[in-house]
Amino acid sequence: KKMSKPQIVFVLGGPGAGKGTQCSKIVETFGYTHLSAGDLLRAERKNPSSKVGTLIERCIKEGKIVPVKITCGLLKTAIFANKNTKFLIDGFPRNKDNLDGWDEEMGDKVDVQFILYLDCPEEVCTKRILNRGLTSGRTDDNVESLKKRFQTYVNETLPIIKHYEKDGKVRSVVTDCTPDEVFERVRKHFS
Ligand code: UP5
Ligand code: MG
Image (cartoon, rainbow, N blue to C red):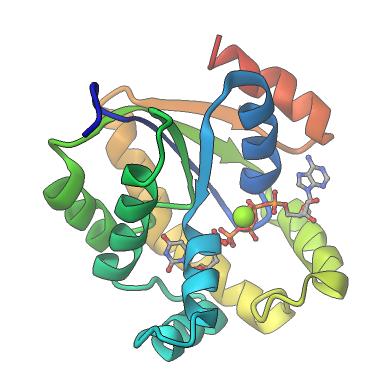
């Protein structure tokens, strides 16, 4: 059992805003453990003994959000399997269902330090994702899926960021510049 509650930073922002890229840098410099909700779901989808693989794949391709029971379960397992007490949770919570399910399951077990919001114009994100799509093999890195991912982001995820803003918990960084320039802005929120 952990001595103190895990400390969580949620990293949110649109598809291609640079969540994964910046999380790697934060890990190197500040010793957090990076948990990407999307990566955990993609790994679960590949797990042959999983009963939810097809559901996950359908959601990802359609840019829809996987039910919180699945995602929160994967995150909870990853947090409590790890000795670290500092975690970056990348790409979650993305909608009201995620937020409510997390609060119910994890609200009293962890402390949410703040939300790191990576703010990037859609045109810039689109260029990045379509470029990555040339080599990523991700089934959602194509024009059709990307449109749906942005719609979901605007309609469902931005309201979650607004919700945390009301609590004064959001630290924003504009990410329309090189990864190192972004990190110079990001690091200020951690030191
Ligand atoms: N790149 C990064 N930063 C750059 C910079 N500053 N300048 C130039 N290039 C930059 O970066 C994307 C690409 O851009 C890379 O090629 C990178 O080199 C370059 P990355 O750091 O990967 O951006 P990121 O924000 O992580 O983009 P990602 O595509 O991973 O974001 P999404 O939010 O779309 O993807 P995620 O994996 O989080 O979710 C995928 C799907 O899973 C969702 O659509 C949903 O269907 C499902 N999901 C859930 O259902 N629930 C969840 O809780 C999480 C996911
Ligand atoms: Mg990512």
